[in-house]
Amino acid sequence: MTRRFSEKSLLIATHNAGKLKEMKEIFGNLGISVTGAADHDLPEPEETEDTFIGNARIKAHAASQATGLPALADDSGIEVDALDGAPGVYTADWAETGNGRDFMMAMEKTHRLLEEKNAPYPRTARFCATLVLAWPDGHEEVFVGHAPGHLVWPPRGREGHGYDPIFIPDGHDVTFAEMTWEEKNAISHRALAIKDMVSKILA
Image 1 (cartoon, rainbow, N blue to C red):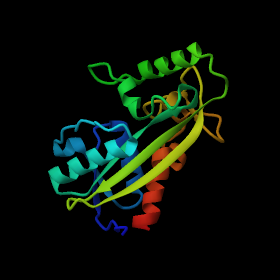
Image 2: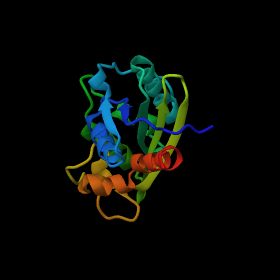
Image 3: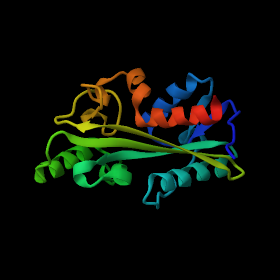
């Protein structure tokens, strides 16, 4: 049975500053205060699953059990059709340098692989987000959002994070990184997953 969320604060189980900022803006408009994993000195659990829902589940339950608070975790990534859905769940791994994450490196890798395959245009892709909301008693709710679009090169825009500078969502002619936070939050994969959450357990 679906559980309603009645709390006034929510722990977002992420150390990603970009994701946290996005979540704070979205949930702030709903009157819900947000804290991040760093606010609670939480370590990053190892993401051992090969699906978005599996990794989101690991992060949400680990944070909720450690703090006794309801915790929302997101696992997201970009799936590129010409690369058979890669990088997908391994999106962040493609940016890993051993000393942090470099998404420009990841975007360059993606572009290079598409060029090597002589992938046709438009180079369609989609951002995917899966949210798992976990309570300390082990109950969870799952929400999903997708934002279809295509990739461009070179990168454009200074806003956003991750692959935003090379992704143009369907129905638009600018990248996520060229949009304001408000514009992106109206249509992003994460925003759509949160809208699903709001309609089911907050409305």
